[in-house]
Image (cartoon, rainbow, N blue to C red; front, side, top):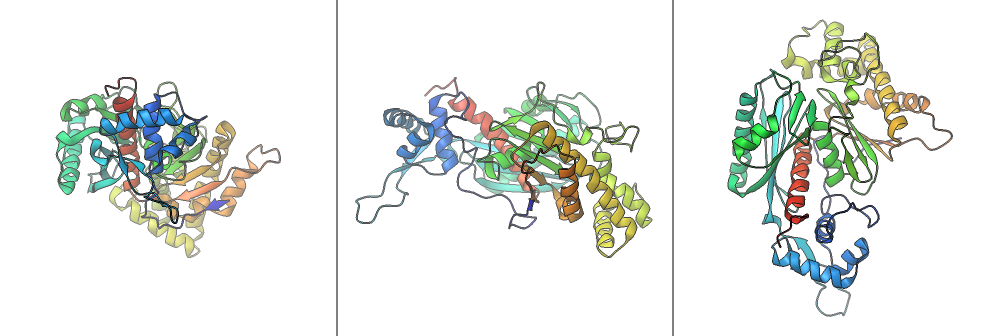
Length: 422
C-alpha cells in the first residue's frame, strides 16, 4: 500500500525534463506552438519526430512552428540524441534555451523561508533558506523578509532582478490565486490582505500567489511522481494540514481558488481548538502544533514554547518507539484522524494516487499499516483495488520549486499563449 521512495527525507524529486507529460488527448486548449514548446521541455530534449507523435500533429506543422520558436529564442537545436550504429551524423534534437526566462519560487512558512532561482528549462540555478521569527507579521514585514530572500538567491547565482520574469510564492492559509489576496494565513497579523499586489508593486514584477499545498502539488506535477498522472492528490502534514488535487492533468483550485482546505474540514463537532479559530478541524488533531500540544502534556513540557515544538515532537516519537504508552496513544490517535481525512479524499475525488508529504512523514505512526487499513475500511471500495498511497518526505526546497513551477507556467502562457508576438 505504501511505497517509500529510495531518496532520503532531505532529497528532492529529480527527472529528465520538467512539466506535466501530457498525451495529445489530455492536452488543454492552448496554441500549438505552446504545446510544442511544453512537449520539448517535458522531455528535456526531443526530436521533431517525437513531437509530432506525442502531439498527433503533422511533420510540417512541427517543423514550421519549431522554427518560429527557435527564431524567437525559446528553443534551440542540439546534436544530442543517440545515433544508430553505422548511420551518419546524430539526429538533431530540440531543447529549451534555459536563459530565455528566469523565475523565482518562494515558500513562506512559520520557521523557514526558502527560495530558488529557476531557468526556463526548470533547472535550479541557486537556492537559499532563511529562518524566520515565529510570530505573525504585517505585510510590510513580510515584504522585507521576501526582499532579503530574493537578494540572497540572486546573489548566490550572480544574477540581477532585472533578469527575472516573474515570482511565484506559496504560503499557508486561504489564498485567492487569481487576485493575490490572502484571506487568512497563520503568518500574517490581519485577514484580507492584498499581499500579491503589494509584492508586484514592491518588485515591479508579475507575482503569483497560491496556497503552499498547491505549490507542493505543482512540484509533484512538474518534477515528481505526478508528471504522467492525470488525477492525483497530495496531502501535506507539517505546521498545518494541506491538500492539493490534480484533475485532468491540471491543478484544481475551486471556483474562487480557495478550495481543498482538508486541514479545516471538521472531524469532531465542538472538538479541539484549531489555529484558524474554529474547533474540530482535522489539523487540530494531526498538525505539528496539535501534536506538540498533546506532547507537552505527555512529557510535562511548556506547550507555549514554540521554539521547542520540533524537539518536543522528536522526543515524543523517541518515547513512542521506546514503548511509552501515552506517546504511542498520541500518534495512534493522530493516525486514526488522518485515516478519516484520507478516506474522505478518496470518496470525494477517487484519485489514481495519494501522496503523503511533509516533514512529519518521518513519523511512521502516521502511515503505519493500521492507518492504511482503517482508511480502506472507511471507503466504499465495492471490491475494487484501494487507492495507492505513497510517502514523499522531500526537503524544504521542494516547496519553493513548486512555487517556481507556478511562475514558469504563468510566464510560458504570457510568452507563448494567445498574445504571442513572434
